[in-house]
Image 1 (cartoon, rainbow, N blue to C red):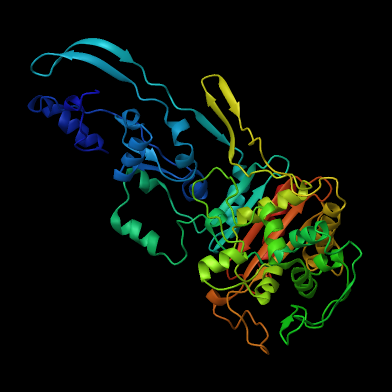
Image 2 (image 1 turned 45 degrees about the vertical axis):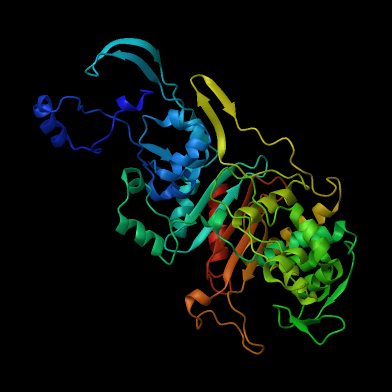
Length: 492
């Protein structure tokens, strides 16, 4: 059918059995019109895998333009659908295969008289993912009704074990062509079901960045493992009257870097940020993957912002102030990141600075040929893999979950497997000087976002996880137990 004069045109798709039967009886009235069957995607797990698997839907004008640009138009001549989102979109080329065609000779009425050449179609590849379906479904059930995201990765190879963004949506209507009303209501839903919060949710990473700040400061020689610092209730920016508060009203007393991570001491990290300066912070935290895409095999991903002097000048047309650096020291201010970035940074820490990209692809199969996922060759190494600092920082995360002074002690120390963790709270609005935070009194949408980044078992980690509960309240009421429940489910 290379000649468009003989191209079939679809008049109506999605016919019911009754419609097919009615047409069959009357077919002789319509020369040149035939009923043909075709296969259509259906997603048995519906909303549970929507953000990962994505969907196919009708080829539209912008798809046609992209195909033309890639010289792939011919390959879609007989197709209704194309992968739009998720794995369906990212691996479209592999999944689609090659369309076959026939070259035929026709008489002057356009009737086929003989077959000259037949090129059979080549089926696309089957794709297998790293996901653990039961874990995915369990997390989905735990997050029901929340605005939340969880991503769990195997730090040994970067394979994504679960990726859940809540609320979700059912991808099936998109295959058949979703109605305008239904689509509008998904778009206008204030809970944003269509976005994948794991890869597109942008949040200040808050205290979850303290381990990476610590490793950077140690590696840059700004502090040593024994540097001691007095954690008062507030910290004053040298040469100014500007005071920055610690979350702990009484202050932390004498600190070293390990204890500062265990107790999430803000004042220690204000001092570290001040001494490092924004240029070195930007250089080091870029190595951990902030402000850039993670390499995950999904097109729906935002890079977030790891601020720098140059960025502020370009975007805000303002110079960088020292005060800006201090907020960045505890993962606030202009810094925004996605949960998938948080988990990638965590796997870098677990692996002594060996960077790996998170990935959903496990393997592709065509006939009897199996291609396993191959990591990119040129992945960088952060810092020195033999440095003792990696262990020092991980030890702080262990203490956070297992020592009585650790902020997560109550929640995590009872686990029969050992957890290492770092939580974070990103403020959605700032409190006045003398107000204290009361989550019950504050309207839900203004409540703080709560994060947990965790890995387990501590000695030989099999899981690295990031969890965010939007507006989760200031005391981690739900977020902590949710994180613990998920880990218990994995290691049960």
